[in-house]
Image 1 (tube, one colour):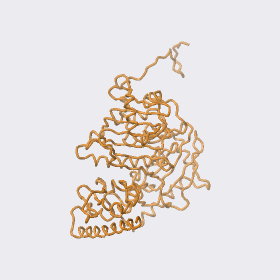
Image 2 (cartoon, one colour):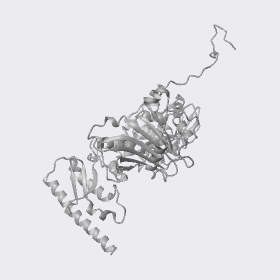
Image 3 (cartoon, helix red, strand yellow):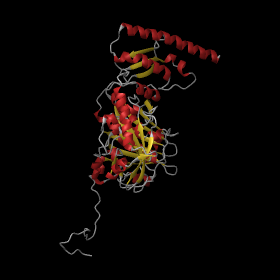
Image 4 (cartoon, helix red, strand yellow):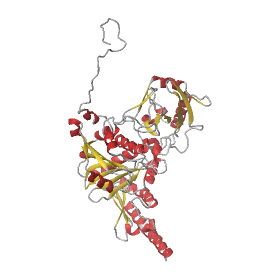
Length: 514
């Protein structure tokens, strides 16, 4: 029906047909400016692995001497055939997601990758299809959306390289031309890796903490030497539960509240009150306390917002102990909308109105909960006696990740300091350990290593009791700089005692074996 001009308001916009306007190739350039942080981008790749049913995910920094060359993410998920690879590499290619999926918009793989790398390669295999691959290079994609088909023989070679992870099926995401790697100056690679991996451990440990507590699911971070294929570092990601306090800050908590939200229905919220002045990483180590108070929102068990009040109130110090867990409804709704980067949730005013009517089963209001959290905070602030532990140089390579986490929970960390590494090396028999203050290394005499492993296979993170005690004893020697006669004498004493103890332990093994 044709449009007839009229002075009346047109409630529907008249049209005279339609035409197809595909996006210009330069649209790819917009994907590189999505504002993805490095950790959030990697988390998006891990989300895809989880959606593919993976139980093992390995994030590997590839290094050639002092140069970082690539980054890969390998998983043992169900994999993709040629058609699946084409869909995965198409912007918005996935039109449907399972209700339980972590993927949401169909752009995460491309946007997250091209925000940080000039080239994205995707290689995969399934139980029924051979290894195949696709590659997007930003420069070529900007011309005409062209996507390279990766040589099938190389695809199989790369899959074979990681056959300890990929067996019958799995996927490899490869980033080349990683822009952050190109900024690393000579001699700074170790420091860059330590800082990058620490941030990545914290981010993944927090946002995927519910998955990391599941039996059989693991995420590991590896630094791999390309020429030798040696693992220069290997860390398992530990979950960081933002509600993982040991004792609640107030008896009777946590409490389960119900918020009647127009457009969604009843929304369950679990209000927690942290114990004041907690040293735990889950409280102090995930960002400024003012940013971490408030709502922790989950979608399909994946944390998508870690703190914040979503415009319902302002952050104030006396609410630092208040954290509320919310699981988003699985059904689509107009009240809660996830950001593209899965780092926050937008809400409509109906959520704030629902909070005003929120109560628990006994009628305790949400406002009363906030008052309880404030009371605990203010009472703790009035107490003048508080033991403050000395800030320490953080533990680094060679220490079991769980032990490292406990040390960081219990001891405040000095910012900007290279971590202390533990390393077994060949040394004279009269020396049990020595320290390198400049390099922040504790060297252990590998002649005595069997005393702490017995018949077990020795690994880089072995002997946790020994290393934990030595870290507590020796950390001050790195922090205080130059040696002193007293500290040198202490180390000579400890060397003598430990050599005798290790020899006694090894003699006992020999006696038992005999």
